[in-house]
Length: 376
Image 1: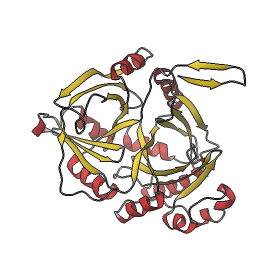
Image 2 (image 1 turned 135 degrees about the horizontal axis):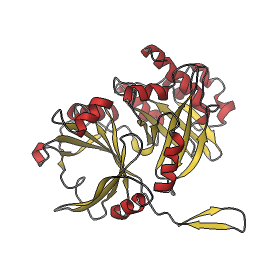
Image 3 (image 1 turned 120 degrees about the vertical axis):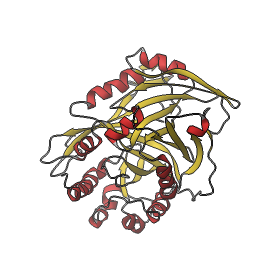
Image 4 (image 1 turned 30 degrees about the vertical axis):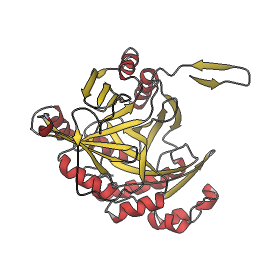
């Protein structure tokens, strides 16, 4: 039960009909899961966790599950040219298919969301093996992305029934990635408000921040964004929509190359962004760079911070402050040849916002990359 403060005397009590405990895993459909898994292990420091495929009785796909602290990635590839996985990859390239959310009751989550207008993509089912049971269900969201509800309180296995432990002699050191902070979706023209309404009505989320084309714009392009959050703040989904500008925005470029709506980037939390980014760069992860002049008036803009400015400047790490503290963030370049999915590394020092003060510098950096690709 949560309360909404109106004034000193009046309080409305509202029930959270879809309690979420965080992100359980994110599944990407990719062209070659074995090689993608090697990339995420080498570049990002994920560890081998679980595997499912022909050897486990699944004939149409192979799935590799990787883990780092509380973050799990599942990489799935089709084994034949027909079927929905192959069609998804043919159209979109590598991309996010499932954002799975941890719940206490997967069956009730399905009931609550579908009776509020959610469209089922996975009917409630229970998977069993000697380690217990996992209950799961799912609904559709923007584009072809789905939300699965995962209930694993009665399961003690490595991941879930149908998977076996994936043992590997190649396990690079982790890089300090902790958990999913938020996932950003790009939607089409005039689709942000309908998607916001979906999260409000079907999943009980609240719109905690809004940015219009005055907040997120450069000389050439603009976009609009609204941040949706569940009641406890464990799950946050900013939704981006293109806005009219002189040239094509990064959201338009994404929609063109992804050939539809989808997850633009995954933000991963760290407790030491300088250390994490140094390791990621040393392993070949490429990041967007802002001009060194960004740091000339950094303290005037964000006030005192605990970090030395020189390492931030050297690595290109951005800083922003809100009423509750500050944050440090850095965005990777796309991790595939299509300019679609990328990653954000974020460290929060109290701040609950999303770096509004960095939007202009960030988007100008993105536009420099778009121009190199000939897509601005």
